[in-house]
Length: 458
Image 1: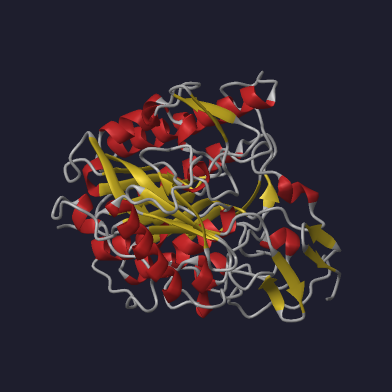
Image 2: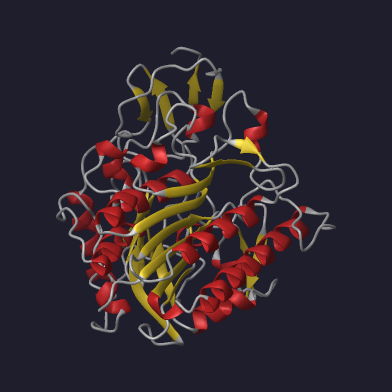
């Protein structure tokens, strides 16, 4: 099989209840729907419930209890020496793809390094070119802007404001331009495209400049996401490389809690930062015309640790063994070689922030973070005391109201026993973020984020 180009689109804060092919009733997303109709729409894919745990899980192939990022951490804003230290991890997504001979690029939101301190962070992470929103930098208000008048860092230019521009357009333009430069097929390309949409602050878009309420702006942002998907897919079609390109569309976690969507007669508040299904069971669509048969809907179990093994498999690139990477490849499933995914459980963890800062750096306040593990039917909530809290039959109870602990159903007992054995295999203590801390910076300021407090120079 010829190695495909790969584009990984990662939305920011958007659950299934705002995508019409998943049954959303409040909005139409025709271009995303067409992408799903042309490939596989997955029903059971887990991210983590927050931004940083999801992204570090995806980039390292490790669960948060192993890579240490079980909490959200906005590195440019909160600092304290924490950062994505590529050298601290045995496997990294960008490096894996570059080592496989791919031309690599990234466009969109990064937020896990401070580019003022590490201007070479993207290159170290394995990317040949980039167009990134740095994240909100402490004591630099213009850097907060990712939408109108965005503050963007590129390979050729230091981070700066682009007056009058709309950030999502710049990122999409970059992705299309990079694809066009590498369309000849001599060197396959990999693009990591972590969109800034649809994260707050709620904003107007070029297509709906008069949106007023937060709900109207949120819908406008979702519709603009759909518009950009059409721009990208249409451009790939004009380049005549759709059949050489695997496109993955997904999200880092569920929607912000202030937005309420609907699927059927279900009213669904956004599940961001929660381990309920609407927080971690995210949209995931795979399109690869000519290789992935169209019109599929899959109940296969997949989570973000599977991304690196899958892409490496497609690229013909070995990755570290299972003792270093937690996921497994779904490439044989995507290519139709195998009829099922080799998994019988998926995991999510890292809800509401519980981290602290000490002289040792950023530390997890709890030795063992709460988490959830599920198979195709059953889900177990596990508390910070390592003990089961609640056991759910997701097929009978998709809103997760009824605890069936003690059920005499043989299938339920079998799943619970499987999960309890899994609990005993996890480390007694979750890792702290693995990195060589950066020294204190002149812009460090006193910050409080729930239980997180530190002062300049601490």
